[in-house]
Image 1: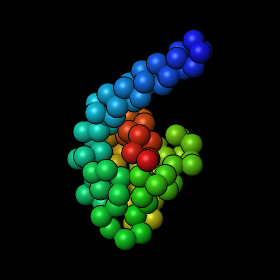
Image 2: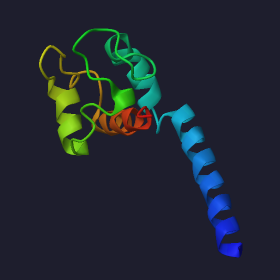
Image 3: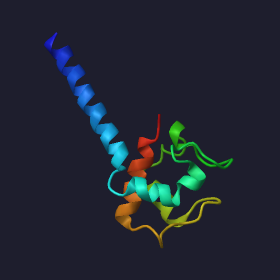
Amino acid sequence: MIARTTAIALACVVSSAASATAQTGFGEGGAIYDTHCASCHGLDGVPNLPGTPDFSRGESLLKSDAELIDSIRYGISSMPGFDHAIDREGLLDVVLYIRLLQR
Protein backbone atom coordinates (compact mmCIF):
# COMPACT_ATOMS: atom_id res chain seq x y z
CA MET A 1 0.00 0.00 0.00
CA ILE A 2 2.83 2.41 0.80
CA ALA A 3 4.45 1.74 -2.58
CA ARG A 4 1.18 2.49 -4.37
CA THR A 5 0.67 5.70 -2.38
CA THR A 6 4.23 6.76 -3.14
CA ALA A 7 3.73 6.01 -6.84
CA ILE A 8 0.52 8.07 -6.91
CA ALA A 9 2.21 10.98 -5.11
CA LEU A 10 5.17 10.83 -7.51
CA ALA A 11 2.82 10.81 -10.50
CA CYS A 12 1.10 13.94 -9.16
CA VAL A 13 4.44 15.71 -8.70
CA VAL A 14 5.57 14.75 -12.21
CA SER A 15 2.23 15.85 -13.66
CA SER A 16 2.44 19.20 -11.86
CA ALA A 17 6.02 19.70 -12.99
CA ALA A 18 5.08 18.88 -16.59
CA SER A 19 2.20 21.35 -16.42
CA ALA A 20 4.46 24.08 -15.04
CA THR A 21 7.08 23.30 -17.65
CA ALA A 22 4.47 23.45 -20.42
CA GLN A 23 3.44 26.89 -19.22
CA THR A 24 7.00 28.19 -19.22
CA GLY A 25 7.85 26.36 -22.44
CA PHE A 26 11.34 25.15 -21.52
CA GLY A 27 13.16 28.43 -21.41
CA GLU A 28 12.09 30.55 -24.33
CA GLY A 29 10.63 27.64 -26.34
CA GLY A 30 7.00 28.64 -25.87
CA ALA A 31 7.59 32.27 -26.78
CA ILE A 32 9.74 31.36 -29.79
CA TYR A 33 7.11 28.84 -30.93
CA ASP A 34 4.34 31.43 -30.60
CA THR A 35 6.37 33.93 -32.64
CA HIS A 36 7.72 31.73 -35.43
CA CYS A 37 5.71 28.49 -35.53
CA ALA A 38 2.16 28.94 -34.27
CA SER A 39 0.85 30.69 -37.38
CA CYS A 40 1.24 27.41 -39.30
CA HIS A 41 1.46 24.73 -36.58
CA GLY A 42 -1.21 26.26 -34.30
CA LEU A 43 -0.86 27.51 -30.73
CA ASP A 44 -1.68 24.06 -29.35
CA GLY A 45 0.14 22.07 -32.04
CA VAL A 46 -2.99 21.53 -34.16
CA PRO A 47 -2.03 22.95 -37.57
CA ASN A 48 -3.72 25.88 -39.27
CA LEU A 49 -2.54 24.85 -42.74
CA PRO A 50 -3.20 21.61 -44.62
CA GLY A 51 -0.18 19.32 -44.83
CA THR A 52 1.47 20.82 -41.76
CA PRO A 53 2.52 18.28 -39.09
CA ASP A 54 0.10 18.01 -36.17
CA PHE A 55 2.33 18.14 -33.10
CA SER A 56 -0.62 17.42 -30.81
CA ARG A 57 -0.80 13.97 -32.45
CA GLY A 58 2.96 13.48 -32.40
CA GLU A 59 3.43 13.77 -36.16
CA SER A 60 7.11 14.26 -37.01
CA LEU A 61 8.09 13.93 -33.34
CA LEU A 62 9.56 10.45 -33.77
CA LYS A 63 12.68 12.16 -35.13
CA SER A 64 15.67 12.78 -32.87
CA ASP A 65 16.18 16.21 -31.32
CA ALA A 66 19.08 16.80 -33.75
CA GLU A 67 16.86 16.03 -36.76
CA LEU A 68 14.12 18.34 -35.48
CA ILE A 69 16.66 21.11 -34.80
CA ASP A 70 17.99 20.77 -38.35
CA SER A 71 14.44 20.92 -39.75
CA ILE A 72 13.79 24.14 -37.85
CA ARG A 73 17.21 25.59 -38.60
CA TYR A 74 17.32 24.86 -42.35
CA GLY A 75 13.64 24.36 -43.18
CA ILE A 76 11.88 21.37 -44.66
CA SER A 77 9.41 21.09 -47.54
CA SER A 78 7.48 24.40 -47.63
CA MET A 79 8.65 25.47 -44.15
CA PRO A 80 11.40 28.11 -44.24
CA GLY A 81 14.53 27.82 -42.14
CA PHE A 82 14.93 29.90 -38.99
CA ASP A 83 18.71 29.72 -38.61
CA HIS A 84 18.91 33.49 -38.88
CA ALA A 85 16.19 34.08 -36.26
CA ILE A 86 16.68 31.45 -33.55
CA ASP A 87 19.95 30.67 -31.77
CA ARG A 88 21.07 27.11 -30.91
CA GLU A 89 19.66 27.23 -27.36
CA GLY A 90 16.38 28.57 -28.69
CA LEU A 91 16.18 25.77 -31.25
CA LEU A 92 16.52 23.17 -28.49
CA ASP A 93 13.95 25.01 -26.37
CA VAL A 94 11.48 24.88 -29.28
CA VAL A 95 12.06 21.16 -29.80
CA LEU A 96 11.46 20.49 -26.12
CA TYR A 97 8.35 22.66 -26.22
CA ILE A 98 6.78 20.97 -29.26
CA ARG A 99 7.30 17.59 -27.60
CA LEU A 100 5.05 18.86 -24.78
CA LEU A 101 2.25 19.60 -27.23
CA GLN A 102 1.68 15.91 -27.92
CA ARG A 103 -1.52 14.71 -26.24
